[in-house]
Every structure is written in structure tokens, then in C-alpha cells.
Image (tube, rainbow, N blue to C red):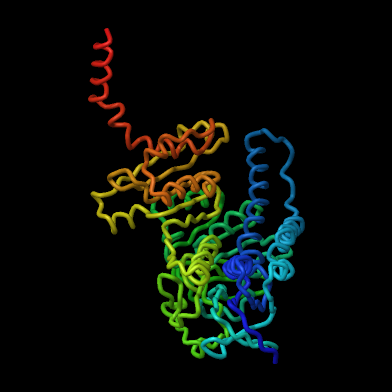
Length: 473
């Protein structure tokens, strides 16, 4: 077996691992990367990229359908060509794949081994062909779908996010177990493509989200035809022919396809943490605020170290690890600076504190909540959108600490608020911004400006203005 020495050894070639490898190698560190599966990990192959491509195709179909309802388009409804949609997903993955490829990373100077690795000591990682002696190691092995223990599940041909994009035909009736982000995104997409869709959720749909936004999304899904079964706990699954039946504590739901979207769990098979002095806690690899494990030479980043499992969080983790390992800067992750988006349409995007979290931390009397809907937004009127809301959370002194946007392109709009929070700006900075007209971004400006409206348009200001002109005369 070959033995090599390296500065940094990374296990996992997904979003977190690749960001770490690229940064470390380009900064001059001798870097080794192990990835036993597909380069690019979940995001490229089974997550962000295929799902957003599917959603984009579904949006096109939905817009065409709406055009006919408004009599803008007069032709009959076209058939959905699911083969072309599947090919489009493959084409997009293929277009992005070279950026995550073994060849590109080797050009950057990373030694890539597409083999399964494991710890063989506190500073040793081995595969079937090589042993790596490292100065530092980074665990970035990601997560995999959590499969719940339900009677009959082993006898059912269920789908997960890793297999649903391999479907060769559009499901007639897709049953989705789980009402989180993945569940609602795919529910809307498949409904728009022509499938009948049912979501079964043991709790409530998007139960971690603010009640007002959650209610808006549920109403939207229902309007588009998605059947929602909340507070329904699946207790048995059966299959007969091409039909799948889900028995819950309240209902019996029949469909043709079953998607399991009930959460994620660590992908750490046979890594032999005990040999490295690495431990897990509450379903995650145990790390401190600097992402360092119990072994000071080993860090854990991405999905294995946080329950906020988003690609941009994985990239942020990689940056923190690079600063701590290479620059010896005691950097720590600040989750309040990381925005997240749920890609339903309209999108739901948020950053920083929610209203509830801010009240718990600072006290209800110490925060300000500002809302601006899109009923008076001219871009919303021209586009024919009827729903939307900007929700800003600030301290009493006006400093922005949280924002939630439910609107078209919310994932783009939230960046303005993310910058303001990161730079510790006040609402006045947002109120002074000039957005293009007409644009959805104006709602952010008006929401922030409402903080000052009472003072600006109040009786005291009117008295001062009248006094000024009186003195001028």
C-alpha cells in the first residue's frame, strides 16, 4: 500500500469538501481528497441542480397553462414531454459537472482518490490503495435520506431525492412523505407538470417557518391542486400491482409513486471515528464554534456539522475551516448571516432572526416588526402576481437583524437584506436605497421606510414645515 504525507486530507467531494479543497490547494496547501461516489455530491447530482431544473421546467408549463386561462394563448394545452424534461436535467448536470470534476481539481493541485476512506489513527486516513498521513483532516461526507421505520416500507419501491430524477415517466399520483422544503418544492413542481400530488406530514407543513408564511404556502399549494394531510402519522405501507397505499392515523391514501422526504442523516459509513478520537452528538459530528472536533487536528464541515443543511452553509463552513487551519484566524460561523430559500413559487427566503427567535433573545419590547405586502407594488401588478410579503425585524434603534421575503425572486431580493445584516446597517440604509422602477425590491425600501413614516409625516414634522415657510414669508 502506498503511503503519502499531506497538509490537508478531506473526506467527501460534495459542496463543502470541494470548496475546502479548492481554497486550500490554491492557497498553497498540499491537499488530498477522497470521494467514493460522484464528484459534486448531493447538490450537483441529486439535490439543488436537478431539483431547480425540474422546477424551472414546471414553471414554464404552469405559465403556459395560465396564459390559456387568461385567453392570451388560444391553443389547446400541450402534452408534457417528460423525456425532454429528464434530458434537460441531465444536460444541466453535465454542463456544471466539469467544475466539480476530478480533472479540474487535479489541475488545481489536489490529489483526488475516488475510493472509500476511513480513519486508521488520530492522524492517518486509509483507503484500499493508499494511506495518508495528514497534518489536518476535514470530514465533509454530507448526509443521505432518512428512511423512517414504517411497517411495510421494505416491500415498497419508494423514491428519494437520489432516485426521483431518474424517473422515466411522469407519476400519475405522487405521494410525498414529509412536508419540509424538499417535499413542498417537488410537490408544486410535479403538480404543475400534471401529476396528482399528496403530501403526508406527521407534524405541519414547513413547521419550522413563521405561521403567516407557512399558511400562505399551504394555501398556494392547495390552490394549485396539492392535497395536504397534516398531523397524519404513517403507520403502514402496502402495495398491490402498480398502486401504493399509505395508511395513516387518519386517512388511507392511494397513489402510484411514493417519495420519502422525511429528513436527512449522516453519511459516515465505516469511517471508524473512534480511531481518530472523533465523536458524534445529537446526530451530528461534535464540533466547537470553530468547527473543530474533539481531535484538534480534525474539522467537520457542511451537513455533518449542522442541521442548517444548505449548499451556501456548506461553502461558509469551508471558508471558516480554511481560516482556522491555514490562516490561524479564530473564525467562527455566524448562521444569522447565511440566507436560505425554499424554491416554491413565489419563493420564500429568509436571513437572520425570525420574529419569534428575536423575541426570545432580545425581548418582545426590544424589537420592531415591519411588513410590506405587494398589493401596492407596481411590478407585482404588471406581472399579475397577487401574493407577496416583506417582513423585516429590527432592534429598537433600527438596526436590521432579520428578514423574510415571500415573493417572486425572493432568493435574489434577500441579498440586499443579507448585506445590511452582515454590515450591521440600520433600516435607514435600506430606506435610502433607490431601486429600479418598477421592481419587487421597492417593497424592501417601503418596509424599511415605514419605520420613519410616523416621524416624517407626523404632526410635529407638519408643524416644523409650516413654521419654516411662515418664517420665509
